[in-house]
Image (cartoon, rainbow, N blue to C red; front, side):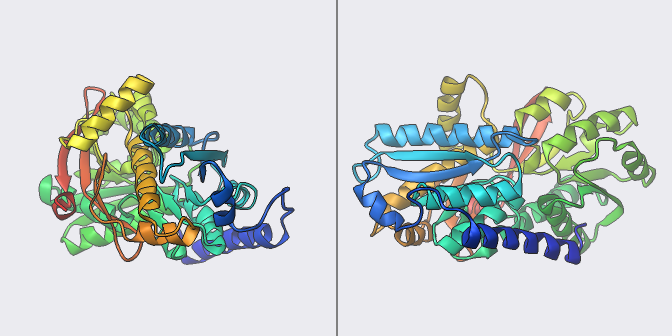
Length: 399
């Protein structure tokens, strides 16, 4: 678990980097000024996007970009927004929070973007969000689920559910649906996403009368998990909850199988959703479940239409990250179309007013805390595929 002191140090570091960039950074030519004024004179609407297009979580960035590009092409072919096309300007944060800070600053000061899309990892969304909020440019994270991301301020939104919802639904699925009461917990202590989910899950298991028989934490840089797996196995859990990214889950699955722990004992989270996990550990995780934002075969009309278009363009099945990028881009364009003024604040207000948006990942309503109220899907790994198992949070699904 990420300690309070460690979290404070991490946030303080991000704030310090933001302050340095905002106050002392060397401005590129043409930096500063009013984005709305630049937008008025431009033949296109400029939107900034910052993602991990390189580094250890490249799959997240590439999938997000593909979903966004598909959405923007559709919007522009249909006439754009208020008679002008949208041009998305991408920056690569190299999977690093400090780079997210720098790239968001560049997009705002150098490129004069009206709005921002990013990121996937909560640590990078928070770092970029600090800058966006201070500069008063609206930002939508397609996929960052840690509750702290939108607490940065009124200009930061998300198009996905939060970890308090996801962690609770994971616990309810294990205890109520699967009927398992004794659970092991395995998470990354130095990751905001993973440790936050572990906290939410732990509290909900306790509330439901279950028992966490053993919990083990590791550092993201670790690659040998055998000791943790054997210690968890010795506690005889009925299931193991692993709220971690696919980059760690693949080696964990392989090492668990070698230790005699079947993949069907694992329940994970949306950080599992990458085609790379199927490539590297589909056999080892056969029968495992994870909470997610959608599944390729989820029986929702908008989802199936998106899957068809994505497969036609990219020749592969879209991940949830791609679907969320698609939804975030379309939600932003929808808000821009409804905005009374094409200014950052006008767009911010329109995003806040979003209700009943029909997305590929379900029906989305932005609540008073700038989070998305939407359904949670349970995905099962079966026959080397991500398959739809169930929908929870049915109230959101039926908005």
